[in-house]
Length: 334
Image (tube, rainbow, N blue to C red; front, side, top):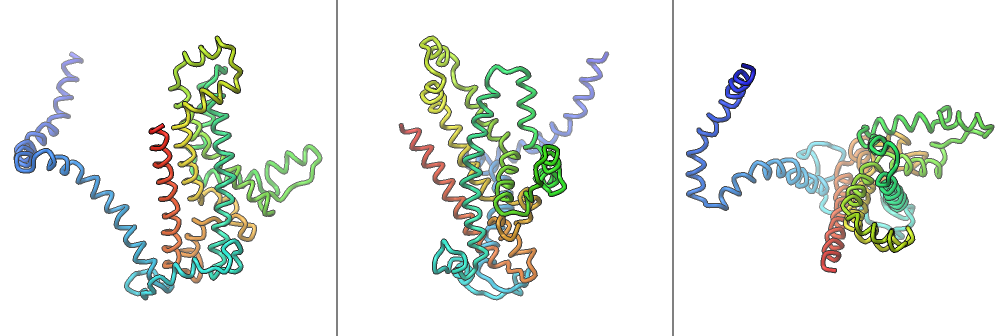
């Protein structure tokens, strides 16, 4: 009785889909007869290509047009054409390593802050992710629970991450309370340049390490166990096993982690902006924050300069992606 009722409910639910399939059958067969296999492939790719064009190609074209305009007006018809002046403003420097000699010193401050952040954050992130993956792949108690614990920060909104750590790092926050309990003086974690920079790096690593550890963990679990058993029978030292077995076989996953972490670090904005607001001064102002404030938040906003800066940053990301593809192909040929 129950089975018959379920079948009747299923038939009612699928009936509209069956009617739609019958309705489309004739025109689809006609389309395939007229255009062949290539036409059918184009037909099924068309919706995705339309979405890609609408949300990627069109905004990119608008961004390029904006980068060649000047003024504070937001709408394109009210803006004046300036050609490559915005790029010239961003790239004109007597000495690119000294932002004070640049025409737009704030842009180069953001660039060098981003470079320092990327170099430190990616190195720390990859090391911590590797160590986490190795631990989670070993035979520890409650392994499933610890995997969930390390992945949990990835599920949090970047704004929530920033607010949580801002509460911990502020002068009257949890970290200074713990220091006070041990008789230490409070520290202005977010008001001193070096501490604010290290706090930004630490929070970013904490927020993203679970995702990259998961990629490395998948790679570790794909390595055949008999290789490790053979090394154990030969009494190979653990450091040699890691250097000669684990690292080479994990290299494809490690390369993906490095490139994804580089791209993510170049785009850093949300959690650091909530945590420090770019301060103290401009010590934690990164490139994406410069683009946001120049284009939208500043009183003398300039969407043209912001668009030009975003295109330059996009060029860097394209280069990083090409490096990843090049390294992958080089590795495959070996």
